[in-house]
Length: 317
Image 1 (spheres, helix red, strand yellow):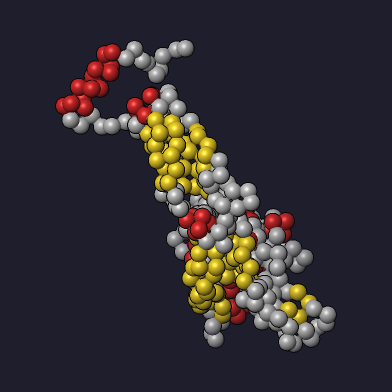
Image 2: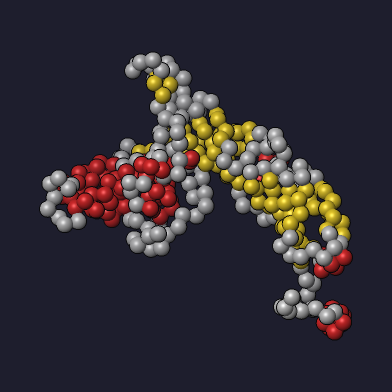
């Protein structure tokens, strides 16, 4: 997938004001709208222009696009990194996957996934035009995996894009104390009542919906409430069997390694994953680790094994 330079598409500078973007879009639309244009590629160009305007005319999407795209050139191979939009607070409904499909794959990959880029909330009328509950806001947040085991109260900072007095995008920061419930799982949404947009006519404010994702962990990976963990074992533990200790965020457990275990085999410890209803399991992926032959004695032992063990892992069955 290629990176798209929306500023280049509209012919504006990266620090263009909202008014400059609006004028550039109208100018391009007058030139390439299929109903009036004589250009051979008018329909394709108009689609590109509409896509660029959909991002650059929206302060929230523009701020996220600017952060992600500052190091890319037009046409450069591009794939958004995981959780690139985490920490941005977005308002409104956003684009559904179906709506985003009308634009390029680049746009759909960045803005067509719901979640942090604007979910299914939005403006909710309450019985008349003069009174309406405020719209919900949305944000993706990254938590420590350990918090899912214990629960916690964490201070979370969100970036809130807006237009300044000159019509340029600026990003404010707001910080909230958020209670993380024990057993929270990736993809779960935490609702903070009244933290969205203000209501109209005395109606209540909208809510802030926080979609939970976990930061990369050096040892563990969550899959729902199941936890995957790589378990290093010595060659003799794998060959002879052993009972080893596994450290978890809130406890230690003993695990029995069966005889002749191989790298890549998996053990399951039921009920030792993230707490919940039901509690997840712990899945241990065995990794046999060889000691280095970095001393004369270690080399001697390996040479003895090579002579006395009739073993060839590449041999035919």
